[in-house]
Image (tube, rainbow, N blue to C red):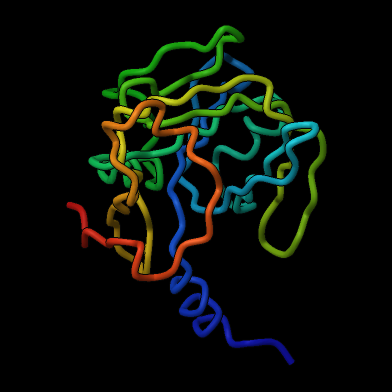
Length: 190
């Protein structure tokens, strides 16, 4: 027997996650995108991530046809943009500033703290989602745009890193394990 659907949602909402907007181009060259919290690193060699996409997403066909996409990691102040890309709005890019990557994919360069350009290596169909496993072919970081936008228990907030953002090369800190007291939840954004 499996857990009830709502109980599963409640459990997973209790796991804070970063927020990203996945963008691509459809067959006509029209930019498409969606908001997700289901992104994770898979491997460093080769650099690989996965993105989970709802089978009902209107962006899925473009992601499959293109085989390439950009994961735009949202920063503080990005909740309205994330809500737009989570909506059923027909033209999500109408009032959004973006530029093409070197390979022509839509990059939300003004609104993201980091990005990863990806090439789909394989797809897994699991339940009501498609898991895109992709090699990261390019990317970048804008450390001045900290802190990241987070999603927790159905609300937006920001996580303030404990390191001083004025430190040199704040992005390249050694990996450490932190406890709950090291994290500061800034509350709902909007």
